[in-house]
Image 1: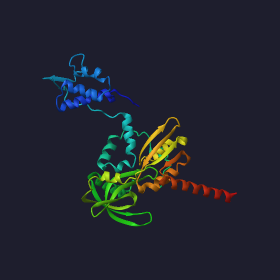
Image 2: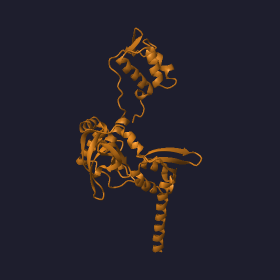
Image 3: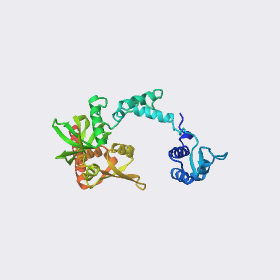
Image 4: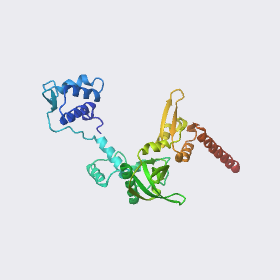
Length: 331
């Protein structure tokens, strides 16, 4: 397998960028030198600029000069084909049923045809997912794909949608929403829609709706309110949950992966070999975040705030009490 090739080097990229921009409008020597310095390493201008401008035996003869301006000698601009490894990675990604949710069918077929002779890096059956629910979304369902496509289009076009939703308890809701973002939960293997509910054409409360429980969705002609992202951010709880993580039982990788859908900052303490993480969340996320952190056991320690730490400690105490009762009953 070819991992490295000179045509994928930084120098090849810099030269191709110079040729592409010079083809649009001839560049001066100073323009080219500035572009090389901008895209290259510290020493790149010393080794690349003069040969690039040269048109004799000491140069690359890729540019021709006229009235102090340089343009490409060849009319054929450089292309950068994918390596075998990149093609195999793309073939692997295409096999993921979630990938099809983001690509139109003609493009999917075109990519499959172009990679028909390429072997994927691995098959999905070769990967065993741990810490994941077994009732994930049905990504192959035509209805699911149709609803996903409508929501994706509405988010990109910034349009309000009319959604009918059925909760796990059988309660039905039909309302207008300004869709903000689609969020994937690796633990639940589900997509959720983050949206603001609209009332009298004004954005109100924040909702997170499981896509599999949306029974119908229709894009309207109404534009989403301006500043939707800022409005959603403003609903975030002011105090993040702060935790300390040890790398016991591969804790760093497990927790960073499981909490990938949350906005967070982290800092590694070399002295204690632990990581401190601040997790920002919305009120609707509180219960899910609590349960998720409990599932990590002694790998984490919740440092605050008290409004989150108190129920966290109470749940652990309750679990301990139940365990003691169970052991006492069995003895």
